Image (cartoon, rainbow, N blue to C red):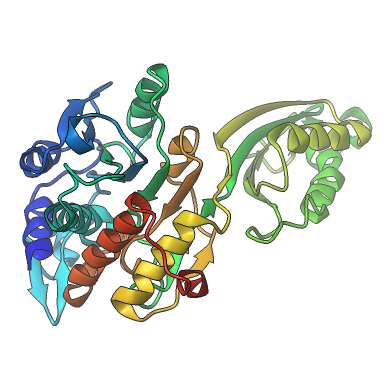
Length: 393
């Protein structure tokens, strides 16, 4: 139960974002004996690690990377946990603790998978073998400003790219192996301020009510079909998240109306295209407005190809479960890594308990998860694939 031991060691460290609580030092101590070189790229109080293992000590072949985070979300009320969140506890076949599913178990399983592959295939001297790497941060659950993005910037500055990347986010829905994320939607937010003329409600001829003026435009924004999606993504969605107007008095027409809204958009749309269509619509409605845009994430997509096929085949071999592709959910650090990696997917344990009280992962899933990672790395490093692999997805 080597995965269990490492997972428990990581869960025991209270690494509430952005505090690493020594997790990366512990991980480095596991990787150095396996031949990995360790580089810390810390920034802004955030801990970041780039670890790389090259065959025969020099870059060769493909670079396969595992990416993840050691930070966890806050625990919530401690008295609601059945057992303390940073005291990993096995109960009824589950390992409980904050970070058990998101995503310290994935990190532990990855390291064991790499260790077994290294020992079994003697990668240091294997002809045609590629390189292995880990990219880990303590700033994924927080602002994500000084974490993975800083490591990617450092790699880009020295023209270091990644061929394949697995992000160890918890992706499975009902059973280990049932889902991998091969893309994520982008997030584009805006704060729209519509100006009117404030005044007394009894004198409508003297006011311009911005709520009344904006309502038809908002209705059209909500009813617009922005795109039809594609094979991998659903149509782009538009949602209002906040709306505010008024002074609090019941007899005053407000002078402004502020609306926050968000697009979750796919590769079927672009940032510039969405912004241009919104501006054209608002101007067509004759609104006096200001709008401030915030791009939270660009969409990324890895179509069915070598990485998806290799991971699905490894999962089928280890668990007997068929893997489905999905692009649902929010954002992940994959959005940064996609800039330097043409094929990237997310794969990890069942996500039903993430961020919840009594977060947990099935103990029976730990060893199969390590086996999935090991088999995937092997297929990619040695271009090992069977005719049946494509049937796995």
